[in-house]
Image 1 (cartoon, rainbow, N blue to C red):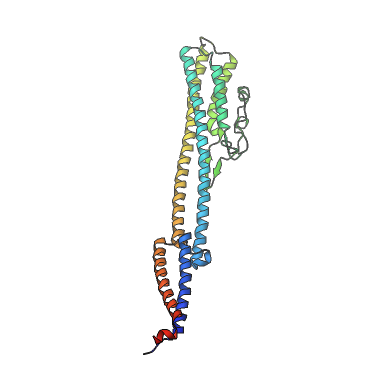
Image 2: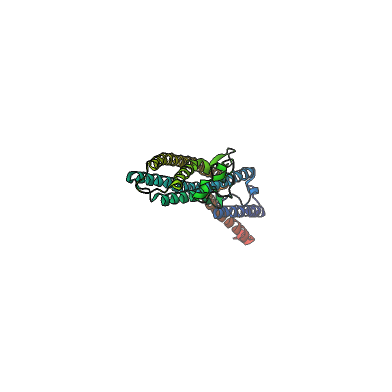
Length: 306
């Protein structure tokens, strides 16, 4: 019978112990970190896939963050447009009340209030950016600051301070879309109605009872204010459409990010259940070989002579 020399058995045992020690270290590291390797080199050919996935994920997260910031702006725009629409509706109601009571003595104050509310709404900004001045982001959208200013301003250039083009944004898809209408498109009808009403007041104070010409002027004002209110509400609807579109894009980017993260996880993450099984098996094997190695080292000639 062929007998394997003791020193060869010891050599093999020592080699197996070294290999198992390295395996155990790797498995324990995977258990602690949750990753298959410490760096990209450890992933071999999959390293390139991980780098590519990280790039896609970073781009996706950046676009999502930009979309969420834009949603804040759109929400602010909605509040501003609501304020302007409410001012138009209230002034129309005030004029209607004056007609029904044939008493216009309170209209001057109500007109002044409506003017201030509309100007404030359209001059709103978000994070230092004017909302309704188009691409002229650092300017207030409305030039006129008083009804007297408005009385002498008849063109868009005189009333508004805005760029030629609407403000647009591209979230990285290569397609730009309008973020907000310009103040002129939103409120031109409103400023025209307020200018005409102010001109009637300047021609003769509204008192009680109203004159026939004043009643006619107020009836015309009701129609003009109704149209002005409609223009503002339509702008608010467009703002809502953009916000909804943006919400869908953010949801899509969130789903894309989850898929990319899953892809990275499939490539880079350790299967902890599998690692635990391998760790247990390696520890058992290590203990068995270590015992054999220990027994061999204790062998002496005396063991064979007994």
